Length: 418
Image (tube, rainbow, N blue to C red; front, side, top):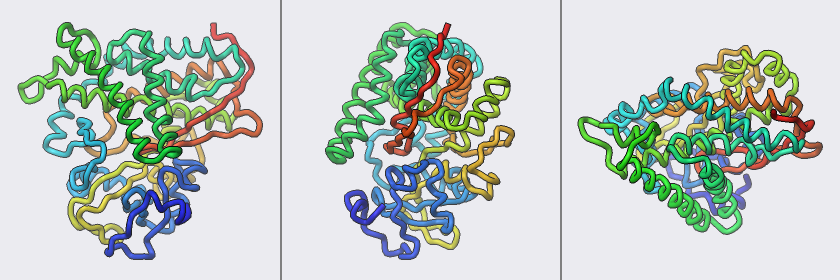
């Protein structure tokens, strides 16, 4: 990113930042990011720590060990918004909380994605995949993000809320608007216009969730909102605002993020038919393959505050600074994963940081893994020969704390899904 490109998004450099550690790195739209977002930090591995003025200024760690330590050290690096202002103005329980408040909620929520609930969800996720494939497969082409990757988790989220199937298309559109619509408006009309559009989408999502909460107060069922309505924390029930915060976070974290993980994985398989054929020939290898695909495609860049002066790699970070911990940067560190850019389905990839680590490790990771597993099984079984069209490639878009595929065109031999 050039200085002129960065001007509207950057800030002045704090006096304690050594000039030699300042890098023009745009984690949402920089050239290193748009080449392949999960490996963006490969361009900066000569520095263990550097500072970017983008977005108000962040320290960026490039090593797996430092990123893991930062994720686990919630006292030195609490969640963003504890020390510096959180522009969203929302708590997003439990993501934006720190101990001891965080532990109270986490204890209540740990059973939300129990093996029993996941087992009950799996056949419904498969049914949704079959419905999408029945529409896609005869066409011989699709735009994978909007045709499959996002509808699958959007439908799953509706099921979690206990909403009927007719709500699926609406939630899919909200998921698209939240990620792609808001970012498009930000880039074409400016930051404030993008934020206002995002706020309007959030209001629509929260309005739907609030209505469900009201309904479940009258009559509970076997869904997440019912679970939250009936849950108790330290002997008291959760209030509506707490339930709304938790359920909204599930939408933000569980729709576009899961859809993007599915898309990243399928994009790799579209470009590497040998790897794809291994999954087709041996579907039992899919769970292990999915974990390696999760490792190589970490695409979040999470923000934490610096709660007190601390030294990392000989660099002084000051109270009130912010850090950016990039999951892909950790997963592509050759000191942690030899030949990190090589996708090896036989690799032990379980220590990857795509879902984080420490007290804020993603609660919905088991559900995300399940959806990716189902997507890999069902899509490859029905459409075995997909590829990118000649001369076309994946387009990426950055928004909030992630960079993900915006458009993923696929072509294939028309198939019958029956």
